[in-house]
Length: 442
Ligand SMILES: [Fe+2]
Image 1 (spheres, rainbow, N blue to C red):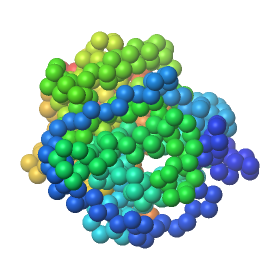
Image 2: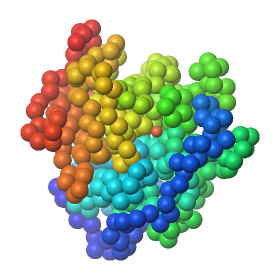
Image 3: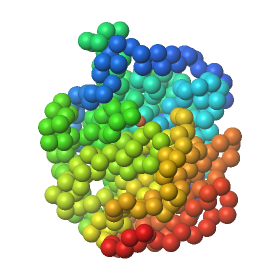
Image 4: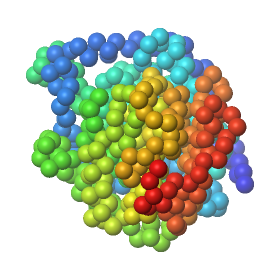
């Protein structure tokens, strides 16, 4: 069913005068307003001295809940359409920043994805994607405020929906002229653009209208109809693994506040999940499992997630990550529950080929199976759920061509994957069998 936007809402206006898309979007830019020179910061004394260290990060804003409600960000006609159709659709992808290599190519890579996502929103109307949940690494290479226009506000200037985000390592990485003091504090620009005290214009948007977001902090939950997304911050290590806790004292500056948050949120959401009212998704930038060349999986993150889920008695229906600049789909089987672990760091920055020695899919390590061969192209996720079923589709987007390359469907009532399709070269989807039940090994 297609419900058309009222004429007066040619552009969305959320509660509290929140605005998302520019009224008259200009054509894609062909050169950066500010040439990205931050690669030189990789050689700065502060980065070289601290690149293998995690960083402390600000506590959530005080006096606000740890969770957001989508109804505070979109107008009633969008919520009414979601409730009328009984399902919600949204986008997710990470690593969108355009910065590396020839500027025109970098811009085209990111714009190809952003424009396809915006087209989904425009063609879908109020029953199309309701928001974009960014999986981190919004700005390369060091999260600088000066690049928010070229890498975020300009590419998504026509994306007429709210964009929530967890930060990636690049959003929090630090540089500086001395080894003692960074030039800016970690996450400074991310906090200003995504964790503001109140909605309003961004000083980093170059005049584009997108309202800053009011997330409680770098970790938070987004409650929407039929789904909640628990977003975590996995710190600043680049080639290293993600870190969301002290890991038993190994990373004391990180602390264990996120574990308490995660466990508390799982317990809060457990009644709704058990009643079949909402799916539960965990989003964390560094993937618990990955086979790409540069970024491996994060064993510590997976262990932390497991500990919290075990304690809360609730396991996620999907785990979403970025960081690795490709698409990967795993299935993890825990206590008979089949859970997609999706890596989609394919938003526009430097597609990275998988490890050369990696066997062809399906490939099982322990309880986790790589279901399809990684797709090393730019693209994004579209997720739809009615709290009983959930589908995830990965589309590539390049030069104006959008192609469905992989999809998976989950029966949430049975915690089983019921079907998946994969198109290795962009055409002729062929069915893939459901993953093995618990106890069977490939
Ligand atoms: Fe990353």
